[in-house]
Length: 462
Ligand SMILES: [Zn+2]
Ligand SMILES: [Zn+2]
Image (cartoon, rainbow, N blue to C red; front, side, top):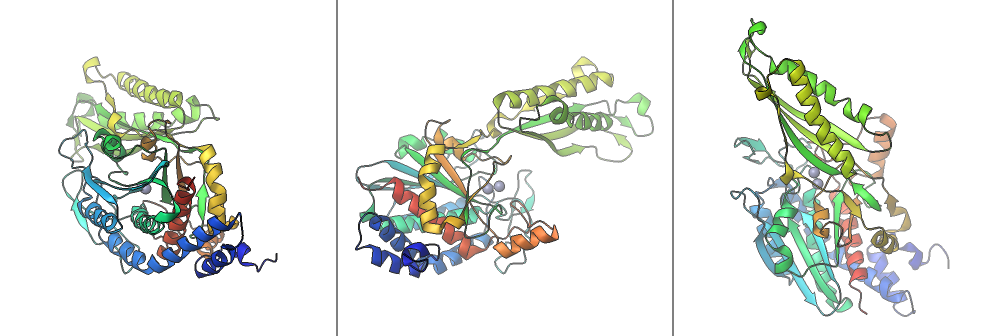
């Protein structure tokens, strides 16, 4: 068998695969997988131009977290058109005013396991600066009630489009698998409360509870057309805290008559930056970021209070607890040191609704799917990616480790773009950047091929 043999040529996906599949249909053991790969390749090739157009339209019409009305309605229509039983408006938030826009498509196709595949649908309050012809110019009401620009700066539009691609592949290849497929459009991933909202609204009573859950996320870790795998710990837990630093307001010219919360807040911020470096073991990962500082109205007024919004990341619960305790301890001690009375000490709170657990990719599941991904994308196009301190609420669908889950990364930029960035030292625009611009065709293609092949593997006929 030479390198030119079609069987070794699987990385040149698409029409070549059809030939490979046709040839192997006549041989034994490897045949069914190769034929299925070829069929997946053919369907994706056929649908790709339409899916890219869908992606561009969705990219131009992003919706903020908990406002995904159009995105979810369109996804519901696509799933219905592909033959799925659709349930929509799933999601109950702790704030009753928020509407749940979760959508689920179910295909029951005989005995076998239930597989859940999730795509998140929400965008971010970012003003797009990609200069792309399909760039967003949308505005929407942000959390503060004012108009903010909106952009799919985390690439969730690639996830929604990929889910539609997978939905079509699996519907067309019904005769090749057995089991139940549950396709989930999840709202509010960026605010880390959408998955919990769907589960709170009885997701697993309303649709079959999965045996395995999969998701993909676009990231510039690897080139477009490739995917990245992180077995085990993949994404950290995220904790949000508020610290309201209280002082005694007064005239800017008479600090002796006031207690300045701006100086106190500055002191607390700097001391908090010693927690990770001086209190956490160098063998443990932790991040403590003070993301916002809000206080004051005029330069000659000492305000009554300053509000700090914090974000903490960790992989271990004891590290998380240490960070939370340190924030409370340092805030209190700094205020006492500044002479604040007991009844004006900082108010420290943890926003429990916005907690995201560690995303732990099931190692056995990753091992099982790796050869499937390698087969359909080519060995060189399946990379190992180290864990990150980012967070995700996809793990919630695994009910705290009861259901094995795997989220894999899809590359975003051309290999040449990444190489250029490496040599110039100017990093490519990553997720949440106003310039984040994944290459649509190859990114969608790799994601749909990998996810479809994984689904066919998990739902294979007995
Ligand atoms: Zn994001
Ligand atoms: Zn994201």
